[in-house]
Image (cartoon, rainbow, N blue to C red):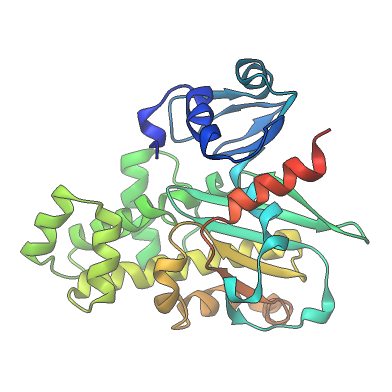
Length: 296
């Protein structure tokens, strides 16, 4: 397996995967974490670029489809089964209509899926980079804290793996709770986001639990924002690499409470089915579906 930050040429990564495929490859679709325009993408959190036409030439393929990674996730949803979801709210599945996808991982990815009367059609967006809006005094202080460090404060600054770390560090620095010495040591040498989540889930740190509670609540709030903007009566999906690991914590209710907390539009949100995606290969399945149905 290649790590994204260890390569600067997408063709190299694809070539390394081809020998494992027991088939003749003539075309493919690739999901990348960044905006895609006319087959070209600048990956948001990495230093490399991706060009579908250049990649097709380099690999000797007839065609390469390039799509945003959340768009690929959206393409993958029809390939999943009931066991691949954790239902957070049943809502009213009979309504149908547009769907929304809000996924936290290395960043915060969002996508829409509009219903054209016959089928659902995914489309990409970059909503994770929209401006974060605080809901209470603590989050106003959080916004100020992050504003001083980053300038623009996006939703991705608080709802992502690094976002969980940002919330934790803010709570620590503002003396909301004490940091255990053993956890401080682990954060210096490991995956800080994973260490914080593990400490919270294991009940070993009040500070980590406060951070994870706020993280899940913020994720639910932004999923509700996206649901309203897309009018996602057909369902709202929360996914990404973090989702399966936090399924138990998310199911405690903080996500849904924040999702529904939209004042006069609460009744509308109550009708929307809300599901957590447990299958971590959804984007790969989606890229495959995109290639099979969209490339000629």
